[in-house]
Amino acid sequence: MESRFFIYISLVVDSLIATFKFIAAYFTGSSSMLSEGIHSLIDLSSQLLLIWGIRTSRRSPSAERPFGYGREFYFWSFIVSLIIFSMGGCISFYEGFLRFYKPEMEGNVTWNYAVLAFAFVFNMISMFAALKAFNKRRGSVPFWEAVVKTKDPSTIIVLLGDFGDLLGLIVAFLGIFLGRLFNKPYYDGSASMIIGIILIVTSGILIRESKSLLMGETTSRKTLRSIIKLTEADEAVIKVKKHFSTYLSPEEVLLQLNTIFKDGLTTHEITDAIERIIKKIKKEFPRIKQIFIEPVAK
Image (tube, rainbow, N blue to C red):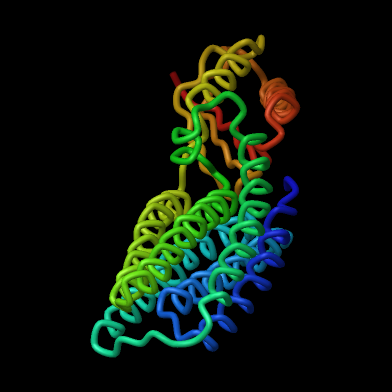
């Protein structure tokens, strides 16, 4: 399993930021600052669930789960996407909506500006850590294509979460600044509603990707072509008739090849060929942990 140290960086950052945002919201009564506190609390909860998902997915296979617990990671990623971000978005939107009925302008605005600046700097640190991990994974693949095709939702959840945080901070700053400038608290309420919309949109993107992974995605066509070519290059093989693959976790793929072997081979020769091919595939593609090669008729 590749290192996900960036999640722990994000966890520490979000803990600090959420604390200071709620303190600032308490002393200033800012709706958008309260929404930003909720935003950071949502991010903090998502890191904890991702860490739990990573740990549970690493458990060894058992009699009840012969293919392991890799899908646990995808399940908790889906929960983060579906509940945490959606819930946070709805709460933030509702908080902004209430501000239109109970407008308030109180407290020292310096608190808000100081916390927003602090949060912006530390969110940038967290985002760059996640971006570094993501760029290492995607290689030369275009950014958005890599987002859509990623098999590791943790990177995308942290990266998009941090990007949404930065947008939310800018919106919160504008809401507080314009509200004070024109003495109209409705700007603050509007900012809170926009932050809620940012969270809900982020949730929609993450739900789409997490659901697809939870349902099961095949490995890339390029990888499958290489595997088929490698298999058919074996002296005992005529061709691969069918192939099936699915990701069990970001670092574990299950593969089945329905293979036509040459006529006249003994059971022992076919068994040797299967073992030989499996060894070559695992050496070339370390992520393919479980391989089943089934001899079939022409």
